[in-house]
Image (cartoon, rainbow, N blue to C red; front, top):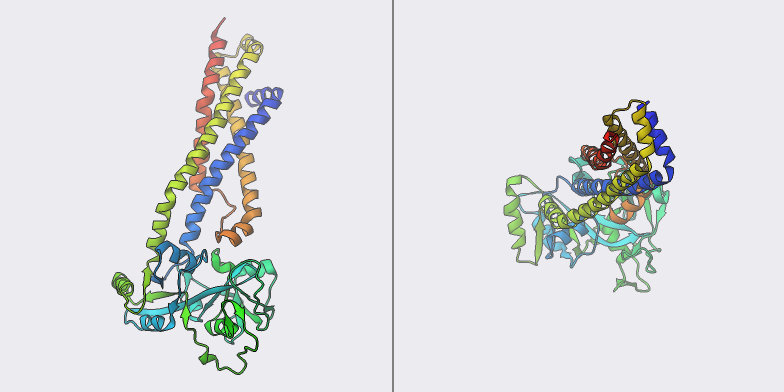
Length: 410
């Protein structure tokens, strides 16, 4: 009876209740979205690379080096000579080294020139190794391995021909159409930028650029008959290192940073990620503050709506008192109405956010390299929803006390 009475009371004021629910839904949507995307972004960035002790690139800021080498965001300031790479790879503390060469693309997706060691040593998440859902690593000059997201979005399968473009622009007029690559492997989904990347051999990168000058193909150029071993790169973009002992990380980092052959930077991925989030903390807190203000405005609107309804319900309150309802009953009735409105707003907000994240997952992944899960329920979000319900009940106590006092009057 108590719940039915609250439902009928809200139904009689359907117009104002609907507007209040919509306002609260928007505020809860913003709060949950900010918190969920913040947590997921951290998790997505942190899980992109693991098991890599050092990343080495041309002298630049540590964040820039991390972003272009791991997340494929931005561009390098300079390249590294192949001679420097070979010399550093032979340092006794180094267990393995994986070169990376950037600069080409395919329909807006980054092409990474590397070695087959990349598929052996690179890890993501909690040191999960890369696995192939189909095919295997490249072996021939014009073989290419593609990520799961790219394969699904462009509907590629093993044996398909792919033409690479010079540069990283989404639309390019400098195409390597005379040297198409064949898809020989498709990686399993990782939820990282690897899913939207293409991997070819360093020799393949050199082959398609033979005869090119300043981004323009020169007539008559060809690599037919050129031995693969002669297609060594003169320079690469960056390389990743795995060391024999974690104790040697700082010593090796210092040795590389002081390398006299050319200006190099060696960074620790984990430490640089921590630096990134420290820089982002101001923006995070600002977004959370704005979202909180939006929620406060909406919940004050709920309190104002209930307060206004008290004046219009004096006759209803008087009738309830006549049939024997105590003042406490009136207080709880107003609180229950506020709770129902709050729960409806939560339901609408969570459904809308889940649908939005599901629909925009591919867009966020392809444009920002972030895998944002559509499952918004986590300890943080549940705690936030509980806090919202408590806050709604506390502010609803103001009109509820007003109704309680009106019910006590003879």
